[in-house]
Amino acid sequence: MIMLADKDAVSVIKDGVYAVKSQSGIGQYRVEEEGGWKCNCPDYLARGGQCKHILATRFYLEIQRDTPDGTVTEKVRLSYPQAWTAYNAAQMDEVRAFDAMLRDIVEAIPEPDQKMGRPRLPIREQLFCSIQKVYSQLSSRRAYSLFQNAKDRGQLNHAPHFNAPSKLLNRADITPILHELVRLSALPVAELETEFSIDSTGFRTTTYSAYCGEKHGQKRENRWIKAHICAGVKTNIVTGIVVTEANGADSPQFASLLDKTARSFEIGEISADMAYSSRDNIDDTIAAGGVAYIPFKSNANGRARGSPGWKKMYHYFQFNREEFMAHYHKRSNVEATNAAIKRKFGETLKSKNFVAQVNELLCKIIAYNLTVIIHEMHEHGVQPDFLNLKSPTCAQSMVRQGV
View 1 (spheres, rainbow, N blue to C red):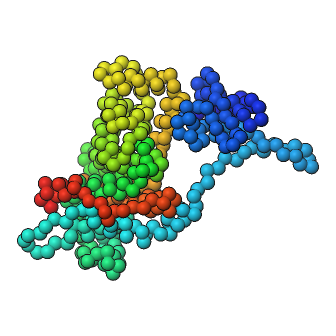
View 2 (view 1 turned 90 degrees about the vertical axis):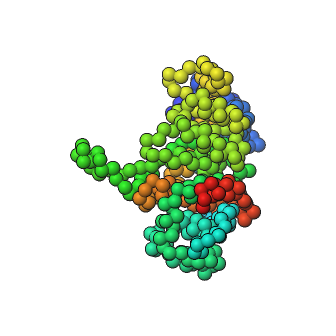
View 3 (view 1 turned 30 degrees about the horizontal axis):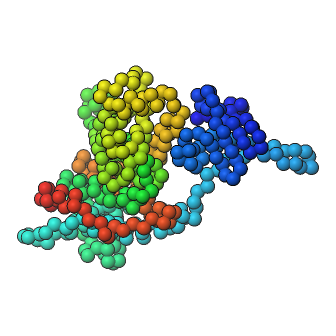
Protein backbone atom coordinates (compact mmCIF):
# COMPACT_ATOMS: atom_id res chain seq x y z
CA MET A 1 0.00 0.00 0.00
CA ILE A 2 0.93 3.65 -0.28
CA MET A 3 2.45 4.73 3.01
CA LEU A 4 0.01 7.21 4.52
CA ALA A 5 2.84 8.65 6.60
CA ASP A 6 4.50 9.89 3.41
CA LYS A 7 3.31 13.47 3.20
CA ASP A 8 4.53 13.72 -0.39
CA ALA A 9 2.62 10.64 -1.59
CA VAL A 10 -0.09 12.84 -3.14
CA SER A 11 0.48 16.08 -5.00
CA VAL A 12 -1.85 18.45 -6.85
CA ILE A 13 -1.38 18.75 -10.61
CA LYS A 14 -4.25 21.18 -11.03
CA ASP A 15 -7.72 21.69 -9.61
CA GLY A 16 -9.36 18.25 -9.29
CA VAL A 17 -6.33 16.35 -10.67
CA TYR A 18 -3.73 14.68 -8.46
CA ALA A 19 -0.54 12.66 -8.83
CA VAL A 20 -0.07 9.66 -6.52
CA LYS A 21 3.28 7.93 -6.06
CA SER A 22 3.62 4.28 -6.99
CA GLN A 23 4.33 1.95 -4.09
CA SER A 24 7.65 1.05 -5.67
CA GLY A 25 8.62 4.73 -5.64
CA ILE A 26 9.12 4.64 -9.39
CA GLY A 27 6.54 6.60 -11.34
CA GLN A 28 3.13 7.88 -10.33
CA TYR A 29 -0.55 7.60 -11.23
CA ARG A 30 -3.01 10.29 -12.23
CA VAL A 31 -6.19 10.58 -10.16
CA GLU A 32 -9.07 12.79 -11.28
CA GLU A 33 -11.99 13.92 -9.15
CA GLU A 34 -14.28 15.59 -11.70
CA GLY A 35 -17.29 13.51 -12.76
CA GLY A 36 -16.50 10.77 -10.25
CA TRP A 37 -13.15 9.48 -9.08
CA LYS A 38 -10.93 7.99 -11.80
CA CYS A 39 -7.37 6.66 -11.89
CA ASN A 40 -5.09 5.45 -14.67
CA CYS A 41 -3.58 2.58 -12.67
CA PRO A 42 -4.00 -0.99 -14.02
CA ASP A 43 -6.16 -2.03 -11.06
CA TYR A 44 -8.74 0.72 -11.69
CA LEU A 45 -8.73 0.13 -15.44
CA ALA A 46 -9.35 -3.59 -14.90
CA ARG A 47 -11.89 -3.48 -12.07
CA GLY A 48 -13.14 0.06 -11.69
CA GLY A 49 -14.37 1.10 -8.27
CA GLN A 50 -11.95 2.85 -5.94
CA CYS A 51 -8.33 1.74 -6.14
CA LYS A 52 -5.85 2.49 -3.36
CA HIS A 53 -4.57 5.56 -5.22
CA ILE A 54 -8.06 7.08 -5.14
CA LEU A 55 -8.39 6.17 -1.46
CA ALA A 56 -4.98 7.74 -0.73
CA THR A 57 -6.04 10.92 -2.54
CA ARG A 58 -9.30 11.10 -0.62
CA PHE A 59 -7.41 10.57 2.63
CA TYR A 60 -4.88 13.31 1.93
CA LEU A 61 -7.27 15.69 0.26
CA GLU A 62 -7.93 18.64 2.51
CA ILE A 63 -11.11 20.67 2.25
CA GLN A 64 -10.75 24.35 3.01
CA ARG A 65 -13.69 26.50 4.04
CA ASP A 66 -13.84 30.11 5.07
CA THR A 67 -15.13 30.94 8.57
CA PRO A 68 -15.29 34.17 10.60
CA ASP A 69 -12.10 33.01 12.28
CA GLY A 70 -10.28 32.48 9.00
CA THR A 71 -9.72 29.54 6.68
CA VAL A 72 -10.24 26.14 8.30
CA THR A 73 -8.70 22.99 6.80
CA GLU A 74 -10.41 19.66 7.40
CA LYS A 75 -9.45 16.15 6.46
CA VAL A 76 -11.89 14.18 4.30
CA ARG A 77 -13.38 11.41 6.44
CA LEU A 78 -13.23 8.09 4.64
CA SER A 79 -16.28 5.90 5.25
CA TYR A 80 -17.61 2.65 3.90
CA PRO A 81 -21.35 2.72 4.61
CA GLN A 82 -23.10 -0.53 5.41
CA ALA A 83 -26.27 -1.30 3.44
CA TRP A 84 -28.18 -1.12 6.70
CA THR A 85 -31.65 -1.41 5.22
CA ALA A 86 -30.80 -4.72 3.51
CA TYR A 87 -28.82 -5.93 6.52
CA ASN A 88 -31.62 -5.22 8.98
CA ALA A 89 -34.23 -6.83 6.73
CA ALA A 90 -32.09 -9.95 6.29
CA GLN A 91 -31.42 -10.29 10.02
CA MET A 92 -35.07 -9.90 10.97
CA ASP A 93 -36.18 -12.42 8.33
CA GLU A 94 -33.34 -14.92 8.75
CA VAL A 95 -34.88 -17.56 11.04
CA ARG A 96 -38.11 -17.81 9.06
CA ALA A 97 -36.36 -17.77 5.68
CA PHE A 98 -33.69 -20.23 6.84
CA ASP A 99 -36.13 -23.04 7.64
CA ALA A 100 -38.07 -22.52 4.41
CA MET A 101 -34.90 -22.44 2.32
CA LEU A 102 -33.42 -25.45 4.12
CA ARG A 103 -36.55 -27.46 3.37
CA ASP A 104 -36.27 -26.52 -0.31
CA ILE A 105 -32.59 -27.40 -0.68
CA VAL A 106 -32.85 -30.86 0.91
CA GLU A 107 -35.51 -31.65 -1.71
CA ALA A 108 -32.62 -31.82 -4.20
CA ILE A 109 -31.44 -34.99 -2.47
CA PRO A 110 -32.96 -38.12 -4.07
CA GLU A 111 -34.87 -40.32 -1.68
CA PRO A 112 -33.72 -43.97 -1.90
CA ASP A 113 -36.34 -46.64 -2.38
CA GLN A 114 -37.04 -48.91 0.58
CA LYS A 115 -38.07 -52.42 -0.41
CA MET A 116 -38.08 -54.15 2.95
CA GLY A 117 -37.90 -53.58 6.69
CA ARG A 118 -39.57 -51.03 8.94
CA PRO A 119 -40.27 -47.63 7.37
CA ARG A 120 -37.27 -45.34 7.76
CA LEU A 121 -37.26 -41.62 8.41
CA PRO A 122 -36.73 -39.96 4.99
CA ILE A 123 -33.10 -38.95 4.38
CA ARG A 124 -34.27 -35.44 3.48
CA GLU A 125 -35.96 -34.98 6.84
CA GLN A 126 -32.92 -36.33 8.68
CA LEU A 127 -30.71 -33.82 6.84
CA PHE A 128 -33.18 -31.03 7.57
CA CYS A 129 -33.13 -31.77 11.30
CA SER A 130 -29.34 -32.16 11.47
CA ILE A 131 -28.61 -28.86 9.72
CA GLN A 132 -31.34 -27.08 11.67
CA LYS A 133 -29.88 -28.32 14.95
CA VAL A 134 -26.38 -27.14 14.01
CA TYR A 135 -27.79 -23.77 12.92
CA SER A 136 -29.59 -23.36 16.25
CA GLN A 137 -26.51 -24.41 18.31
CA LEU A 138 -28.88 -26.11 20.72
CA SER A 139 -28.37 -29.48 22.38
CA SER A 140 -30.14 -32.48 20.85
CA ARG A 141 -32.89 -32.49 23.48
CA ARG A 142 -33.51 -28.74 23.32
CA ALA A 143 -33.54 -28.81 19.51
CA TYR A 144 -36.42 -31.28 19.55
CA SER A 145 -38.90 -28.42 19.90
CA LEU A 146 -37.57 -27.03 16.60
CA PHE A 147 -38.47 -30.31 14.89
CA GLN A 148 -41.97 -30.13 16.33
CA ASN A 149 -42.36 -26.54 15.12
CA ALA A 150 -41.20 -27.58 11.65
CA LYS A 151 -43.77 -30.39 11.67
CA ASP A 152 -46.51 -27.91 12.61
CA ARG A 153 -45.47 -25.70 9.66
CA GLY A 154 -45.62 -28.65 7.27
CA GLN A 155 -41.84 -28.75 6.71
CA LEU A 156 -41.58 -32.22 8.27
CA ASN A 157 -43.97 -35.15 8.15
CA HIS A 158 -42.74 -36.44 11.49
CA ALA A 159 -40.69 -34.95 14.34
CA PRO A 160 -37.90 -37.51 14.83
CA HIS A 161 -36.36 -38.66 18.08
CA PHE A 162 -33.95 -36.08 19.47
CA ASN A 163 -31.02 -38.44 18.83
CA ALA A 164 -31.77 -38.76 15.10
CA PRO A 165 -29.43 -35.89 14.03
CA SER A 166 -26.54 -37.32 16.07
CA LYS A 167 -27.02 -40.75 14.51
CA LEU A 168 -27.02 -39.26 11.02
CA LEU A 169 -23.83 -37.27 11.60
CA ASN A 170 -22.05 -40.47 12.63
CA ARG A 171 -22.58 -42.00 9.17
CA ALA A 172 -19.64 -41.75 6.76
CA ASP A 173 -21.94 -42.24 3.75
CA ILE A 174 -23.61 -38.89 4.53
CA THR A 175 -20.37 -36.91 4.05
CA PRO A 176 -20.47 -36.75 0.21
CA ILE A 177 -24.14 -35.73 0.37
CA LEU A 178 -23.28 -32.85 2.71
CA HIS A 179 -20.45 -31.80 0.37
CA GLU A 180 -22.99 -31.68 -2.44
CA LEU A 181 -25.32 -29.58 -0.32
CA VAL A 182 -22.45 -27.12 0.24
CA ARG A 183 -22.14 -26.80 -3.53
CA LEU A 184 -25.88 -26.42 -4.07
CA SER A 185 -26.17 -23.83 -1.28
CA ALA A 186 -23.69 -21.58 -3.11
CA LEU A 187 -25.32 -21.82 -6.55
CA PRO A 188 -27.71 -18.83 -6.25
CA VAL A 189 -24.78 -16.36 -6.31
CA ALA A 190 -22.95 -18.00 -9.23
CA GLU A 191 -23.57 -14.94 -11.41
CA LEU A 192 -22.09 -12.59 -8.79
CA GLU A 193 -18.80 -14.37 -8.13
CA THR A 194 -15.79 -14.79 -10.42
CA GLU A 195 -13.02 -14.04 -7.91
CA PHE A 196 -12.20 -16.41 -5.05
CA SER A 197 -9.78 -16.78 -2.16
CA ILE A 198 -8.51 -19.88 -0.39
CA ASP A 199 -7.30 -20.41 3.17
CA SER A 200 -7.60 -22.80 6.11
CA THR A 201 -8.68 -22.47 9.72
CA GLY A 202 -9.04 -24.73 12.74
CA PHE A 203 -12.13 -25.86 14.63
CA ARG A 204 -11.82 -27.13 18.17
CA THR A 205 -13.41 -30.41 19.22
CA THR A 206 -14.50 -31.53 22.68
CA THR A 207 -12.14 -34.51 22.65
CA TYR A 208 -8.63 -34.41 24.12
CA SER A 209 -5.20 -35.76 23.36
CA ALA A 210 -4.37 -37.71 26.52
CA TYR A 211 -1.15 -39.38 25.34
CA CYS A 212 1.09 -36.28 25.54
CA GLY A 213 -0.33 -35.42 28.94
CA GLU A 214 0.45 -38.82 30.34
CA LYS A 215 3.89 -39.09 28.76
CA HIS A 216 5.18 -35.54 29.06
CA GLY A 217 3.11 -34.14 31.91
CA GLN A 218 1.43 -31.56 29.69
CA LYS A 219 -1.99 -30.18 30.46
CA ARG A 220 -4.97 -31.57 28.63
CA GLU A 221 -5.49 -29.94 25.22
CA ASN A 222 -8.42 -30.10 22.84
CA ARG A 223 -8.01 -31.82 19.51
CA TRP A 224 -8.57 -29.69 16.42
CA ILE A 225 -9.62 -30.39 12.87
CA LYS A 226 -8.78 -28.18 9.93
CA ALA A 227 -11.17 -26.70 7.38
CA HIS A 228 -9.68 -25.68 4.02
CA ILE A 229 -12.19 -23.46 2.24
CA CYS A 230 -12.63 -21.52 -0.96
CA ALA A 231 -14.83 -18.41 -0.66
CA GLY A 232 -16.19 -15.84 -3.07
CA VAL A 233 -14.58 -12.43 -2.70
CA LYS A 234 -17.79 -10.42 -3.16
CA THR A 235 -20.37 -12.31 -1.08
CA ASN A 236 -18.07 -14.47 1.10
CA ILE A 237 -20.05 -17.57 0.09
CA VAL A 238 -18.21 -20.88 0.65
CA THR A 239 -17.87 -22.64 -2.71
CA GLY A 240 -15.83 -25.62 -1.58
CA ILE A 241 -14.42 -27.20 1.57
CA VAL A 242 -11.95 -29.96 2.43
CA VAL A 243 -11.67 -31.15 6.03
CA THR A 244 -8.46 -32.73 7.36
CA GLU A 245 -6.81 -33.53 10.65
CA ALA A 246 -5.19 -30.60 12.44
CA ASN A 247 -1.81 -31.14 10.76
CA GLY A 248 -3.22 -31.44 7.23
CA ALA A 249 -1.03 -29.52 4.76
CA ASP A 250 -2.58 -26.56 2.93
CA SER A 251 -1.14 -26.71 -0.58
CA PRO A 252 -2.33 -30.24 -1.53
CA GLN A 253 -5.96 -29.19 -0.92
CA PHE A 254 -5.84 -26.37 -3.49
CA ALA A 255 -6.68 -28.56 -6.50
CA SER A 256 -9.72 -30.10 -4.81
CA LEU A 257 -11.05 -26.69 -3.71
CA LEU A 258 -10.52 -25.30 -7.20
CA ASP A 259 -12.32 -28.26 -8.76
CA LYS A 260 -15.29 -27.97 -6.39
CA THR A 261 -15.61 -24.27 -7.21
CA ALA A 262 -15.18 -24.67 -10.96
CA ARG A 263 -18.11 -27.10 -11.07
CA SER A 264 -20.52 -24.24 -10.42
CA PHE A 265 -18.62 -20.97 -10.94
CA GLU A 266 -16.63 -19.26 -13.65
CA ILE A 267 -13.08 -18.84 -12.38
CA GLY A 268 -11.63 -15.38 -12.99
CA GLU A 269 -8.91 -15.24 -10.37
CA ILE A 270 -7.92 -16.99 -7.16
CA SER A 271 -5.83 -15.54 -4.36
CA ALA A 272 -4.10 -17.53 -1.63
CA ASP A 273 -1.19 -17.07 0.71
CA MET A 274 2.36 -18.28 0.28
CA ALA A 275 1.59 -21.73 1.71
CA TYR A 276 -0.19 -22.56 -1.58
CA SER A 277 2.70 -21.46 -3.81
CA SER A 278 3.45 -24.28 -6.27
CA ARG A 279 3.67 -24.87 -9.99
CA ASP A 280 0.81 -27.38 -9.88
CA ASN A 281 -1.55 -24.91 -8.22
CA ILE A 282 -0.80 -22.19 -10.76
CA ASP A 283 -1.18 -24.63 -13.66
CA ASP A 284 -4.49 -25.95 -12.27
CA THR A 285 -5.85 -22.42 -12.01
CA ILE A 286 -4.85 -21.63 -15.59
CA ALA A 287 -6.47 -24.86 -16.77
CA ALA A 288 -9.68 -23.74 -15.02
CA GLY A 289 -9.57 -20.45 -16.95
CA GLY A 290 -8.34 -18.23 -14.12
CA VAL A 291 -5.28 -16.43 -12.78
CA ALA A 292 -3.63 -17.42 -9.48
CA TYR A 293 -2.38 -14.55 -7.32
CA ILE A 294 -0.15 -16.43 -4.88
CA PRO A 295 3.00 -14.70 -3.59
CA PHE A 296 6.31 -16.46 -4.17
CA LYS A 297 8.57 -17.62 -1.37
CA SER A 298 11.94 -15.94 -0.89
CA ASN A 299 13.81 -18.96 -2.26
CA ALA A 300 11.61 -19.32 -5.38
CA ASN A 301 13.02 -18.75 -8.84
CA GLY A 302 11.52 -18.14 -12.26
CA ARG A 303 12.55 -21.41 -13.89
CA ALA A 304 9.53 -22.94 -15.59
CA ARG A 305 10.37 -26.64 -15.06
CA GLY A 306 7.47 -27.55 -17.31
CA SER A 307 5.20 -24.77 -16.04
CA PRO A 308 5.15 -21.67 -18.29
CA GLY A 309 2.44 -20.25 -16.02
CA TRP A 310 4.81 -20.35 -13.05
CA LYS A 311 7.48 -18.45 -14.98
CA LYS A 312 5.00 -15.85 -16.21
CA MET A 313 3.50 -15.20 -12.75
CA TYR A 314 6.94 -15.13 -11.12
CA HIS A 315 8.11 -12.32 -13.38
CA TYR A 316 4.78 -10.54 -12.98
CA PHE A 317 5.25 -10.77 -9.20
CA GLN A 318 8.82 -9.44 -9.41
CA PHE A 319 8.29 -6.56 -11.84
CA ASN A 320 4.67 -5.56 -11.17
CA ARG A 321 4.61 -6.09 -7.43
CA GLU A 322 2.15 -3.31 -6.65
CA GLU A 323 -0.40 -4.50 -9.20
CA PHE A 324 0.09 -8.13 -8.14
CA MET A 325 -0.43 -7.32 -4.47
CA ALA A 326 -3.59 -5.34 -5.22
CA HIS A 327 -5.10 -8.60 -6.51
CA TYR A 328 -3.52 -10.72 -3.78
CA HIS A 329 -4.97 -8.63 -0.96
CA LYS A 330 -8.44 -9.88 -1.90
CA ARG A 331 -7.33 -12.95 0.04
CA SER A 332 -8.34 -11.15 3.23
CA ASN A 333 -11.96 -11.90 2.29
CA VAL A 334 -11.54 -15.59 3.10
CA GLU A 335 -10.24 -14.65 6.55
CA ALA A 336 -13.40 -12.58 7.01
CA THR A 337 -15.42 -15.63 5.94
CA ASN A 338 -13.70 -17.87 8.50
CA ALA A 339 -14.30 -15.27 11.21
CA ALA A 340 -17.98 -14.91 10.26
CA ILE A 341 -18.57 -18.68 10.42
CA LYS A 342 -17.01 -18.95 13.86
CA ARG A 343 -18.69 -15.82 15.17
CA LYS A 344 -22.12 -17.00 14.05
CA PHE A 345 -21.90 -20.74 14.72
CA GLY A 346 -18.97 -21.09 17.11
CA GLU A 347 -15.55 -22.66 16.59
CA THR A 348 -16.26 -25.72 18.74
CA LEU A 349 -17.62 -28.99 17.36
CA LYS A 350 -19.74 -31.02 19.77
CA SER A 351 -19.41 -34.42 18.05
CA LYS A 352 -17.10 -37.02 19.57
CA ASN A 353 -15.52 -38.83 16.61
CA PHE A 354 -13.85 -37.63 13.42
CA VAL A 355 -16.60 -38.70 11.00
CA ALA A 356 -19.28 -36.91 13.01
CA GLN A 357 -17.04 -33.86 13.47
CA VAL A 358 -16.53 -33.58 9.72
CA ASN A 359 -20.25 -33.88 9.08
CA GLU A 360 -21.09 -31.36 11.79
CA LEU A 361 -18.62 -28.89 10.27
CA LEU A 362 -20.16 -29.38 6.83
CA CYS A 363 -23.58 -28.64 8.36
CA LYS A 364 -22.13 -25.39 9.74
CA ILE A 365 -20.96 -24.41 6.25
CA ILE A 366 -24.34 -25.21 4.69
CA ALA A 367 -26.10 -23.17 7.39
CA TYR A 368 -23.65 -20.29 6.88
CA ASN A 369 -24.16 -20.33 3.10
CA LEU A 370 -27.93 -20.16 3.51
CA THR A 371 -27.58 -17.10 5.74
CA VAL A 372 -25.41 -15.49 3.06
CA ILE A 373 -28.08 -16.22 0.45
CA ILE A 374 -30.73 -14.64 2.69
CA HIS A 375 -28.62 -11.48 2.90
CA GLU A 376 -28.06 -11.42 -0.86
CA MET A 377 -31.80 -11.77 -1.43
CA HIS A 378 -32.29 -8.45 0.33
CA GLU A 379 -29.17 -6.62 -0.91
CA HIS A 380 -28.82 -7.79 -4.52
CA GLY A 381 -32.22 -9.29 -5.27
CA VAL A 382 -30.93 -12.87 -5.56
CA GLN A 383 -33.80 -15.32 -6.10
CA PRO A 384 -32.79 -18.86 -5.08
CA ASP A 385 -34.65 -21.65 -6.83
CA PHE A 386 -33.64 -24.71 -4.83
CA LEU A 387 -36.88 -26.57 -5.59
CA ASN A 388 -35.81 -27.04 -9.22
CA LEU A 389 -32.38 -28.40 -8.32
CA LYS A 390 -31.60 -32.05 -8.89
CA SER A 391 -28.40 -33.65 -7.73
CA PRO A 392 -27.21 -36.61 -9.79
CA THR A 393 -24.00 -36.53 -7.75
CA CYS A 394 -25.96 -37.38 -4.61
CA ALA A 395 -27.94 -40.08 -6.39
CA GLN A 396 -24.75 -41.79 -7.64
CA SER A 397 -23.15 -41.53 -4.21
CA MET A 398 -26.16 -43.04 -2.49
CA VAL A 399 -26.22 -45.96 -4.89
CA ARG A 400 -22.50 -46.61 -4.30
CA GLN A 401 -22.89 -46.37 -0.53
CA GLY A 402 -26.10 -48.41 -0.46
CA VAL A 403 -27.99 -45.66 1.38
